[in-house]
Image (tube, rainbow, N blue to C red; front, side, top):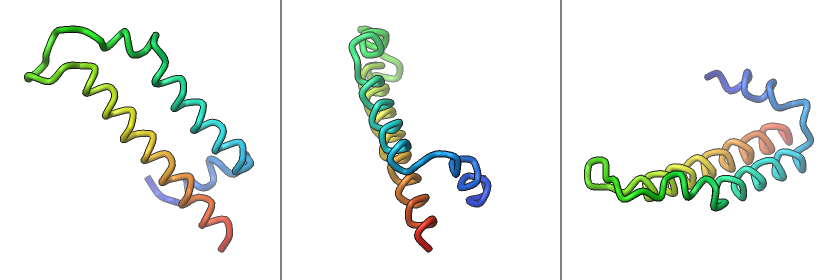
Length: 77
């Protein structure tokens, strides 16, 4: 994805609103309803689905924070 397209798609939001959205997405992703979906004893390739879910959500959250910080630094220049 081109960076300019990404920056154009979030220009309608205030940076404070974007931080709140990322924070709320993080809270919702770690709530018990979502965690119980993946809390199964079934192992795919020897890895429990809960570990895959937790680490995937964690990585996606870090990536969203990275994109948001890049967006903020891009706005300042």
